[in-house]
Length: 311
Length: 320
Image 1 (cartoon, chains in turn purple, red):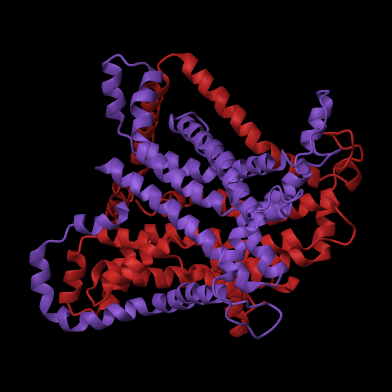
Image 2 (tube, one colour):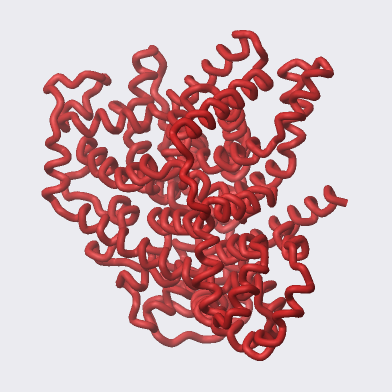
């Protein structure tokens, strides 16, 4: 994490600290805690405690409908790891992560680069690309469920007009996940677009000028200046995107509810189904921790890769 | 990329001297900006027309594709039910345009209530999150106390915890606290956002410490220094974080969906997504509801586009 290095770089003249040390020294240790107290209260109550409590629940057969629960050891984990449905929803999640992340990174870069070059109508382009990101998920799914409808949906209607046969965008097992990736691309590309745009705007002009003097054409400038300058940003965007895609739930739940025939069920929906539809909170907690382990693993691998690149 | 935050500090401190730039000066800076954009355009697309034409075509095609779903939804929401679900597809409705769908949806009644709930929940979440995160960030940035490094490490580690894995224990907790199916139950678990603490700490780290030292020598308490010296310098980051938190809370689906049960407590994403009318799917009404649900944030975005874009760019990247 590069973020942790910044305190060292912050300018702090040592002289001024020692001159002000007298009145501060006594008061500080206490006020530090007062500043932190409200945050720590909520942090402990709604983050630390549920982590611990969830871990404990995962070792019991706690249910949503009965009060008493018994210690069950690791049996929930054993069951989850041998349940083919758990593996298939994990597989669906990974598949979705790949087919959604790749276009989400590529398309967002193309959009950001085009807007960055200074085409006229900045306001309009930015609004069009970013606006879908501001829509609540249920608005997005309502619109796309309508677009994907069989006979009078826009997509199939246009296919009809072109003389092609209709496609079961959400009802065909082989296609549904691709449709969801398409919806996700439309909905969330604006976020990556903004991240790329602000990174691009930090490239100093003189790099291009120097390349121009060296006789590099515009494509050449794109490939040997812009893209290399975007390396670390791209790494970060890929990580953020992969993590976001692994956590997919909302749009799938609302568009297909995991169907047809479980083809789009994500791991988070598996957790939701077993806990809140199947009432098995203990089992759902165990699956949550398996998923958590996956998320931590992805983050650590990425951190390792980033570190290797730095050194 | 620390330069974005330093320049924000500079901008904040440079803005305080009372010299409103005159109109001619503003016009001059605008002309200067225009020249810079033109220069960059030449550098990236080349001096000729070909690069420009190609770039405009690609951006226009992409924009058209991105506008189409929303545009079609708007058109359909102004059609009658029969025209909205006409097969084969008709762009121009036979029965003419009508706002009946909007009238029906608003008369049926839940949507204004959900919007109101969303406003309440997002406002509570924003105020509480920004307050507690700013205080904590300042403590992590400036103050020395035992356990500081350890607690900050914990906050960094918490970045890796997906909120989604906490829904099962949190739901149980909400029942125990008697907060399930209440607006507070929707709002409170959302106020823990370690990323916002880190974003603001990075910002505070860049503020020169001398100003605070001077105030302290004048006898100001730590709270007073924070309130009267640091916060006014931090307006840009506070705006950025508030916007990010508000929009995240507004669009949050999973937790409000889990913790609410009665339609009167639902927020916009949950209500629109789960409550279906009794007559089956009616697409004109569906699109009208969707448009009403989309409108609040779209209006806010058009009013504050610049702030929102900067807010997402800084908060989204962890303030780097």
